[in-house]
Length: 417
Ligand code: DWN
Image (tube, rainbow, N blue to C red; front, top):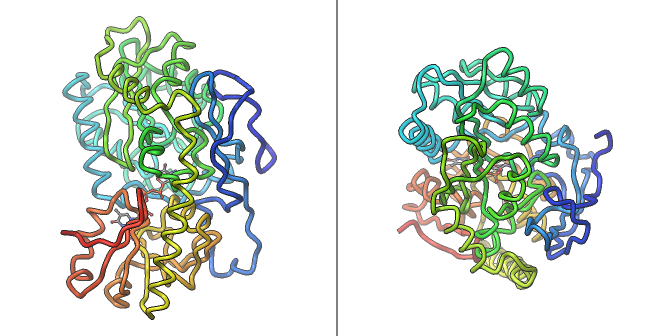
């Protein structure tokens, strides 16, 4: 793909061309395109951000595909910053060890392995691990940490290369990447090629059920091409003689599904969890466009409420800062048209993000020690999905009278207890 972006022509799972738009967040810069100080005078690229529903297979997807090379070749997000996520990775490795008999000699592949956060847990267990990640900066960090990482986008070629050099994989994981992929056929083809006959492929991604029910519209940005339900995924894997045999629901990232996939001829049998989750999707009216029609109104209300509260705080001569220079935060700030006159700085513990500015809203990103130093009156948790961890980290701030603002599912001022 040479151009910066291209319109979506048809559904990426069932090729249906009659897609229905149900949300338009306007034009926004890329969510992780943080800005260096010396580039503040440069114009930023913005792209339309619209969500379409496929009435055939029920997949929600963006109307536009931004060139992944622009978004992922150098990536400022580090999975290991959050202790909650490290614990989460331990849980996944333990499930594989205990429930699927992963042994020392087994090969574990993590697609979009970031800084090696998940593979570290499998390595500790003694497994052979290989990561694949397109971000050169992250692959460098992972390799330095002893996690063998191939710096490339996942593809059938990469899968064949690994199979030739290392054999087939017992477990292939794809954490927070499946929703980022445009060509799902190439992606699944690669997985099918490398996965052992009784191997398991595990996808984890935000569940569109929570996106809609909890108005988590800030998780909509150009990196997230698809908003996943189990039903369309079942349709996709059936095309590859593969099937979903288990689905776990997990609260991570605002509510995610962990989907376990295997070859049809494998020894894995379907358990009731799959039907239970599709039942929830059906009861949530997510298989018909009607289930999405109140969404944009609820999104609009959050914009209104957040602006009201931030302007009132400003009029009271009080100061607001934020914690978590998140991708989702950039959708929220840019859609709500909130800038540095309302939020003085965003704290973040990711070294790659510090001393940069947020895309569009151009708020300075500083070290989190500034929360104690500057003691703002309010702290908006843009990483609301890690609210518990952030509140624990800022107990002194709260003891000194600080208050938290949580923007999703509805704007609330709150304390940790
Ligand atoms: O899918 C994606 C998810 C998994 O991660 C990616 N496309 C992009 C990214 O989205 P995000 O930036 O909205 O994710 P998080 O995980 O909510 O980001 C948390 C941010 O908060 C990071 O920048 C790190 C920061 N943080 C921190 O500074 N101190 C987080 C914690 C827990 C902390 O203690």
